[in-house]
View 1: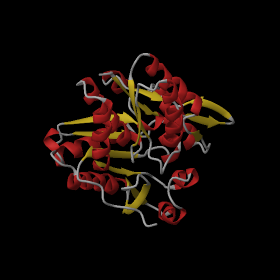
View 2: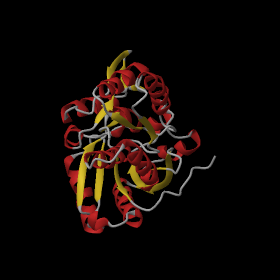
View 3: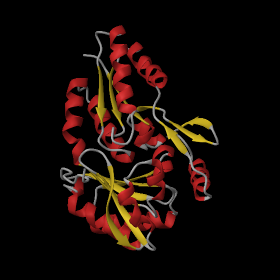
Amino acid sequence: MRKVKIITDSCSDLSAELLVKYNIDYCRMSTVEDGVESPALLTWSREDAHRLYDTIRNGKRITTAQVSMEEFNTVFSKYLDEGFDIIYIGCASKQSGSVNTGRLCAKKLLEKYPEQRIFVIDALNACIGEGMLAIEAAKLAAEGKDAAYINDYIISIRKNVQEFATVHTLEHLKKAGRVSASSAFFGNLIGVKPILVADTEGAQVAFKKVKGRQSSLREIVALLKENITDPENSTVYLAHADCSDEEVEALKAMVMAEIHAKEICTCIIGPIIGASVGPDTIGLWAFGKPVTFCAEK
């Protein structure tokens, strides 16, 4: 039985430490600033993240590009040459075209490597929700499970990723085309803070509005508490876009007081998701009840 390599992409927002801990690789997307394209690295420092988010705070728009065919070919070929089967867990197809490009690349490569397998999975999530699935896949790979088993298992749990995040404004998401214009209007009302979820089809949806930042933080904790399963044995992932240490610690304290999770893993939202959601976004993710909410067509 062949070894299995777990690969994700820049939208997974796994920290450098998590990538090493779980032996996960990722395909690089790109950011574009003033016409200059740069790889969207997850191994960036806190200082690098602060510079990016300050650039956005100062009014400059950062655009993004999905994983290229060349990048997929380079990363996939590396592990195929080493004898691996591959599981690629990509950003929700409702938010990126990378999964479709990955499938095209895999189909072409398997003509050259007919004895090996590449499974391309639409995570139906982005940000650390996507990363959580990659971690679960990597645990199974480390246990010696084959690629087909891992593929089936990840597909079976991808709708159990619960996401509750809040942003200061939906303006960044609106410009990036990540939420519909009809839902973006309330993000501009004074003091109103939208709550975001990933719906059952993988779309990023603003589904609720809360008055004030502190109320929005309490709300995402309450929503996760309602939807998490087996919290005492669960990891809650907290991801943020350059929020203050004080705010991050305050949210962690709320989670521990209300949910009693086994542990909280904190990550910085990476450059691709960050360019879409904007500075000071903060959210909570964990496995829980199946997601049933779907945005109106």
